[in-house]
Image 1: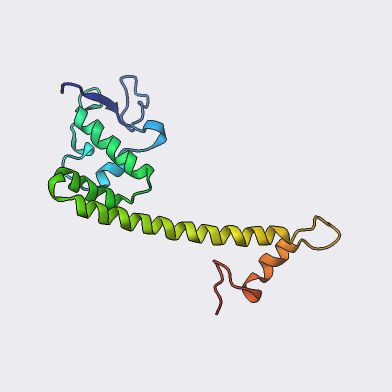
Image 2 (image 1 turned 135 degrees about the vertical axis):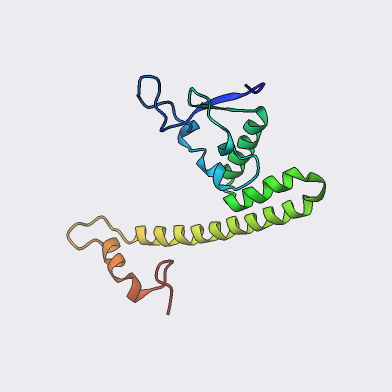
Length: 158
């Protein structure tokens, strides 16, 4: 075994009794995306032990934590791959990391702007309801006529 190794049982491997085994999904997430990063020293490259477990060194746990943190910041997998490459050469990557992060920030800002516009549309739509059930629902009516009457995120102005 590897010192400080972490055993992980993978799904699909039957235990001694023929039943399914533990999952490799901490908190419900698969480790499969790590293999899709296509970086050297991938977690998926490790051989299984006879028990069906794979042993990972502490450096693999650190790599996994790095990736999970990037993903928690909504960094796309291709950018995570680039960040891992930059981490392997920290003395020459600072400007590249800053550029990648600046691009990600710009993307987040664009998404926030779109979400704010969506919020305004939804709030305006919600204000159309007077709660009176004696006539057709104004919100549903608006959904039916949205493409004809005004521009929105799903029906831009012609």
